[in-house]
Image 1 (cartoon, rainbow, N blue to C red):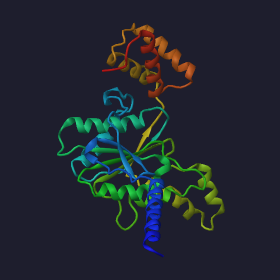
Image 2 (image 1 turned 180 degrees about the horizontal axis):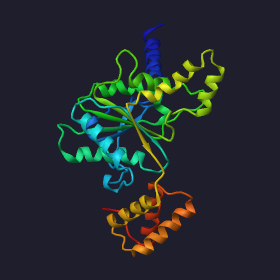
Image 3 (image 1 turned 135 degrees about the vertical axis):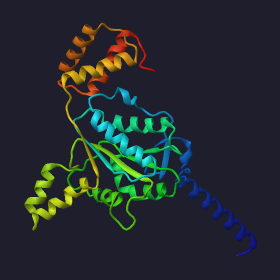
Image 4 (image 1 turned 120 degrees about the horizontal axis):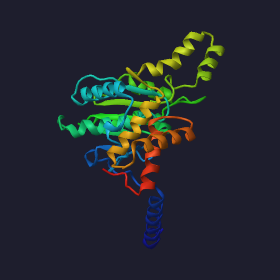
Length: 291
């Protein structure tokens, strides 16, 4: 092949390489831990996406859960101070402020200004639990301390990703990094369907060992904080707290009657229902929910 042929072939190869490189996915951006105090783990890209404005309420507006609130705040303060602290499972009734309490606690810790560096909150989606080892590798190399948070955590039939969670929390050779703690919310205390556990018991050679395998996941959480359905008084206290905080000028008896009617139409009382009523009331009054 003469020089002209070699030159033409080289040009074709260069164009081919350029075309292939355009088809390849772009490299994920470098995660900048200093960009924010809250992040969402984007597992496919291997990237911590900053959240400039977090959807949360002030911790003083979360009513009816004073005991578990104090336990969670104390545990988080100890962790932020560099002292030993436990992984936490917040479980129980829907809409009683489990995830709101985690986010509000994180905000209170950082607002206090008592700690040498801000505490970081990283949310991981339930479907990305099997990528926990990769995320832990990123976090443990950082000088910051992290609350790793998974909302509405549970596992269905034939789902084996719970094993990744078990290993990341306390198992494996390395175990959980010292600068990471794991908080999860769930409607289930044992995170797995009861019929799944019962099925394991009925089909296993040693039923007790099979059940232990499933239940031991919850045991990785040193603290179990239970959230139960609220009373009517607690519900009305939540509504009143929201109304005062957001300056909704409504007669006390009118507020009570409308809040109870709203709960009746929903068939339940909870912090979420109280907040939804507050949104409806603010809309009718033409008041923004800010401040």
